Image (cartoon, rainbow, N blue to C red; front, side):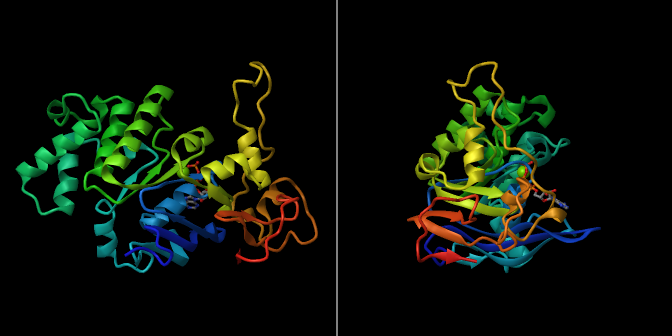
Length: 338
Ligand SMILES: Nc1ncnc2c1ncn2[C@@H]1O[C@H](COP(=O)(O)OP(=O)(O)OP(=O)(O)O)[C@@H](O)[C@H]1O
Ligand SMILES: [Mg+2]
């Protein structure tokens, strides 16, 4: 059984806040998106936009005691993970949902051998003997193309290269053949060749295992190559979402356009200044209730204190409808959120 709209994951109006010395601040502000079965959904946005906090909220791995989910639902296979008991969420995490963390070293325990760490994941989620778990771990390392896996099982994380460590982290996330994988910047720390190998590997495993993937990245090039759908986040909110083909062909929000413009192309003259989006993502304490991209651009316009409605402009293409940031779009009459 899937979520109310038939997707394996449906995040609905999720609100996540942090208790800080400046009060309770919202890092994720009514975020909604869905992941259809077997598809890859990319979440893109600049540093600090709330991508990782969204991911950590889904699997309830928020920094404690500061992080709290204060509203919304995360429907996964028909269950609301926001309401799930701690035991239930522990079984889902690493079992049905695999997580690949932003920092590979933080996902591996430096004092245990690789083999022990992979075996533990199998033993935690399956009733399986040590011997069988060991064989399954070797098979998993083989699957992620670790050469001489039996030998590598005896290594400590620091004895492996960055690319190799990231493959181990992927092996840990995929060990129990999850139906959903959340990959938070899985290739940022790697050079381009290794990045391409890891992304190929994930695509191949996705095919073999029929997984759905949430891929978090600030690299639109990676999104273009790997994702079916894209969610663009800005300052804790989704400002636009659409299929990847539609988003690249017809971006509507000024922020999405800014992100797309900042990708250098082969036509960019080699010594020219690259396009950037002026200003910075506001800190949580500075967030306005109105259009946050207008806030960044220093625009104070009548009406911008209201949160712009989220509207469906064409089937599956949603945008936060700010009079300035999405000027010139045809306004539909139905499908309006908040
Ligand atoms: N433990 C915390 N306490 C207070 N604020 C936090 C905490 N963790 C994250 N934040 C804030 O939440 C916001 C979103 O952070 P998040 O890590 O989700 O960004 P991100 O989009 O993943 O960025 P990056 O691309 O750099 O990984 C940021 O403003 C960040 O400062
Ligand atoms: Mg992050």
